[in-house]
Length: 342
Image 1 (tube, rainbow, N blue to C red):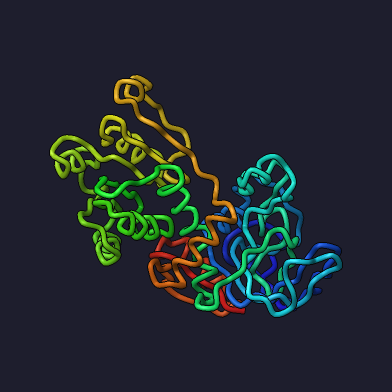
Image 2: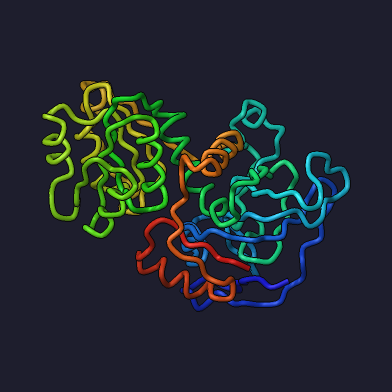
């Protein structure tokens, strides 16, 4: 099969389009013919050797895929050749206490597609049967490949953890990124007032196009001060946070009494100095999100297929041009998602 293979860490130039043996399925495994693969910033971290997670070389990147089953191994019962599916990027064994409780994204014995195993930057990818989600007939491959890491995670943050209620005010940071564009849509679908923040006017325009009621350029003004101004000094009920660093700290200050903050990323700063007094005086709740379980992924796939949500795909590239797609990602020029097409 054709695949994008890395033999060492480095810049986009280490992504090589090569012929490599197609994986052979074992008992309980399926081979998925990849029709679309989504790019994620974590792919950059793996490529550069920054993730802190071990993997052997040569390696194939790619957390997100969508396609159809090419071959089912012995003992596979739930799927058959030709079924349209998406592998879950959070790999789980289906048997640990977290999996049996429905939190397969927190599997005690899990891995990550494209990190602990070969990923989606290829014509085929092999995964255990347990790590597949069916695709609705009305959901395209590119939308499915763009939705799992971002839209499903945003749903887990906003609906499952923050438990958004109609009429609440929500601040979405990084509102033009993959998580942000999804969170803006989800908060509006939940009947909330949405304030989107980002670092440029171009990004804020995208947030407004997706439904943000107000926007804040946090590179030009204080996020906290502007949020308080827009809410009459009260603050927002919920913050959907994926930026980190000082933006996270300003977001805590921008929360109303009894507010909730949910975070899933921290590229602007992984370590911050928190004032615990703010937490207990304002009775703040703060949640961390590590992907989404299969049940949430299936819900998001259904809603996108029904046209109630959209996975914002900025551009598609042929698989052979993965290096060019990574250059775009490294330049932080992506608005939404980029998808590779084998």
